Image 1 (tube, rainbow, N blue to C red):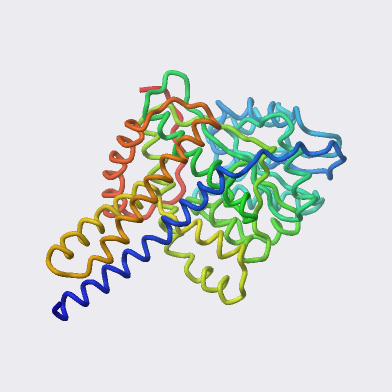
Image 2 (cartoon, rainbow, N blue to C red):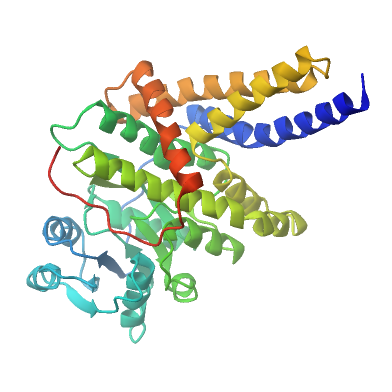
Length: 398
């Protein structure tokens, strides 16, 4: 074997080993989720008072139903606060008529959910509640969600995340069903796997509960696209890794139009990829201080979107196969093939788990078409400019 082939074999082996890490993390989470049994019901005990903060930007269509869902679970002493953030519609009026405390924030140069969350915390700081729960203005709560989140925070003294899933709107096509599968896999199945292993989960945007000292000490004011992901990592770095509260459930609907679904997914994935590039220092810090919770949470963030992970492994397998035919070592090819097999098995197992848990109707062929369709999205991500926060368009069906 020539020196060039030796070097090529080494580089391919290193690349295959690096790609095997997120694949192993993903497969381990899915395998652990299979072992997870539903937790026993929480005992009906008293809980501390809480404040529910609802960041809202032009949400006049949905905020009324969200507030009704929240108010039905409030107890005496609880507070409901809506932050009407840079609104141009009747969001603030509807929130006030619904009995909420309303904070109106107008700053067109500082747009984003993080700024609204920060405004809500500053509104509460004169009389801070023991627990703060964030709920998006287009979400509905399952029965008992606020009590379950509050008791989890009280017992664990850490942030708690409800199971937060999206459902397809009436009249939606197969693309929505497959998007729901991907969402359930990310926000329900994988967190359950981490919980089964005794590890923390990510914050997923709505149904996030915090002890007051933790959230009051967090830096929230930003236009970050994936503010929830960043906040969860910040909490973990500070020694407060979030935990999953499976007894709490929050639901929302995907945007009605197929174009809006794609735009929403592009923003999420662009933000996720940006976080992957930023978390290496946290991984090194976790390794230095032997912080298993932080290391696990960072490794979970470093699992790229599934389409990208599969595409990268397929491309690397093809290159390793060509190199092996040219006389390079076959070890990288064997490692790449093993990684692909693990990913394929984990994807099938995750599809079965997600389908059993949520009852959506999409088959393997539709999932494969969804994954292939995402490849064009990544071409745009590689060529596109960085994005700030943008509200999701929830207009009519097309």
